[in-house]
Length: 352
Image (cartoon, rainbow, N blue to C red; front, side, top):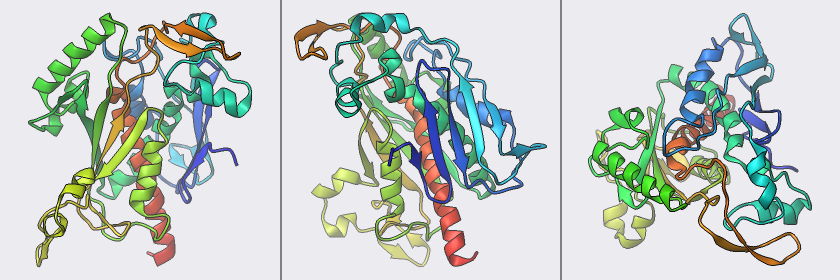
């Protein structure tokens, strides 16, 4: 089976390529009667769209959404909801000179090995542009979660080697890095501007906090809620790792330190990240995702072409020098999709 769909009860299928006619998503499993408008989705699309600052790609896409099915008189019908976003500012010219070269760190090589053909324009299906459909589906999921009192907040915890120290979730949308520390955000931006000048890129870490989650969500053994969140996040291009709660730090802790003690008022700590045995505890679900540096850079690199001949490559064009700012709404969206999926599965199983 081709891996273009995700979810069980709330299931999404994304489609389209970076420089094709359009990208979008088909969402199956949306309950009927939910009030929904283009603007509900547009709010999230505006957070993800390119061209917002110096630390993102200069490609200009309005990303105006078009809901073409599953909606009638402002309410969902229960039938598949389809959202399309037409590409308006694709510039394929920058890829002509490197169409036969494999960019180091990029999916060029693996797509060619798998299919024997690839859309080299803007990376085709391997482009971050594919995530537009995910964010549209996430916007619908967020609408559902809002009614259930569940909030998802992600932010850039670290970028270009600079980490947030004084966490303030209220300022995330007030700086181009979507960082939770204004001083760190300024330093991140300054460092990334330096990297742009030398044709390089930077990686980072995105943290996500999901609050208001009831205890009991998650399907043992293989569909644990942390397992599904991990798959959702790792499925994003550029994400190379994920940890929950204390994460890899747990390897250096004692059991007496890592175990979240309980009293009549609940848990005293949250080293488990809000999940035990793959089932939510009722605490905040907290995870962090490691995002690699953007592979398409102007810095000269050694590679091979499709004939196996060694060569040098320098990638010009419009690419994000750091992925974390635009990754923030995408990670929120994938988390929302997982949460809605598990809520609906739980309700159908428990008849609640």
